[in-house]
Structure formats: structure tokens, C-alpha cells
Image (cartoon, rainbow, N blue to C red):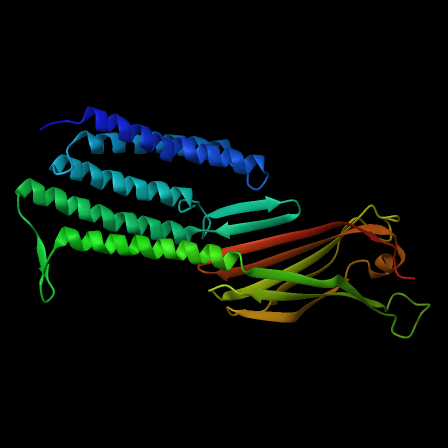
Length: 322
């Protein structure tokens, strides 16, 4: 059987670029922009995965396309590529329901659970791999395997069609995900936090006073997917307190597990409200100057992706309540 040294080297170079060079350059660019950080262990893993993937690709193209050896190596290479993508999208993340990527921009952070995408890509590679396995058997035995559904279909062609359809569906899913993500909006009211103070009719007695801080926001979902199971947590922290005995630095109030159900596609939902009661050191909060930090956590399921959005509003001057 004739071997193809030149073709093997060419595809080895191409695979090295796709498996190793392009991902590592992308990691450095994204890391340099401060959007994401990638651990050295992750980069090393991608390097090892890439070297093995390049070897698979070279072996695949060493043999002519119509040979059983080519199809058999193509089967192994495709299965391996599916595992590579599964790892890239966090499918192997231990102890976590969904593999997670984090995007951080200043005081704004998004955690993305992408394991659904990992499983879709792995399944697509598995279907394509079955095509190559059946083709290898057919070429080895010089016999076609068929299935009858009103007419005969070559079995390897069936898996090829199914694999192609799955690839197109996944590509469409990615495209719709990008489009929908660019058409989402989360807007806080102006001002974002409104003070609600009640002295309970006893101006000289602060111990029975109540302080609530209300937040109002609007969600604009002009994308193709609904936003499901929205939970919002808000926490207030004090720092640089002028009197740490009255108002210690640390948490001064929180409102957890505020549930908002579903924000449907192509809708805008204004006037969603969350109220946070100041429950820790209320008297000190009323009377003490400090610096406040507001932290908002927004978790939801969007297009099969778990999303945790964390926003921080630091360095807010608080002068107490006159």
C-alpha cells in the first residue's frame, strides 16, 4: 500500500496550527486583554492534547483515502477530536455540574457553564466517527452495509448525513447564541439604589428605625431564547467606617434568592424590584460615615447554558442619614 509522506507532513503542519498554535495564541490575546485568565495547567493540557491530535492527523493522511487503514485512523482521530473539544468546553470539570468559563471585565464577571455544548460536540464527533468505522469495515471486507427505509441506503452514508446535519445544527445553535447574546440588556434604574428610611414616628429613638435600599431594573431580551429561572442576590458591605464600634467593616445587609421566573424572548420587562433590608448594625448604619460596596449576583439558564453574572459597585460614599 502506497504511503503519502508529503501529504502527511502538510496535514501535520495544518493540524499543529489548529490544535496548538491557534488556541495558545488566542489564550494569550484574551489574557492580555484582561477578559479571561487561563491556568498554566490548562495551557499544558491543550499542548499535550494538540500534540496527540497532530500525530493522529499525520497518521490518517499517511495512507490513501480509499484504504481501510485511512478510515480506521480517521475513526480514532475523530473520536479523539471529540474528546479534545469536550475538554475545551469544560466537560471534564470535576465536581461541577457544568464546566465553567469566567469572563472578567473590571467589576463585571460572567461565569458560563458550557457542558451542554461539550456534549453536543462530543456526540457529533461520535456520529462522524461511526461513519469512518463502517467505511473501514466495508473497504476491508469489500462489502457494503445497507439499511432499508423504502429504499436502500449505504450505512456509512447514513452516518455521514446524520453527522453533517448535527454539525449544521450545532453551527446554527452557535450562530443563534451569538445573535441572542448581543441582543440582551440588563439596565439598572437611575439612580440604581433608592433609600427607604422609616423612623417609626420616634425621631429621637433610632433602635426601632428601619432602613431598606430598593433596586429597580429592566431586562430586555430581544434574542431567540427565553431566560429561565432567574435568581438575584444583593449584598451590601461597609469599609473605611468612621466608627467601627458602631458600624464594623463587613456585611451590613443582603437579600438572597429573589426569584423572577422567565423573561421570554423578544420582550422587555421593566420595573423589576428587589428590596434589601439593613439588618446588621442598623443604628450604626444610620449614624456612621463609611464607604459602601454593592454586589449583585444574577444566575439563570439561557439556551442550555448556566450563567452567573456578578457585578460590583465599589467605593460608594455613605454619609449616614441626617
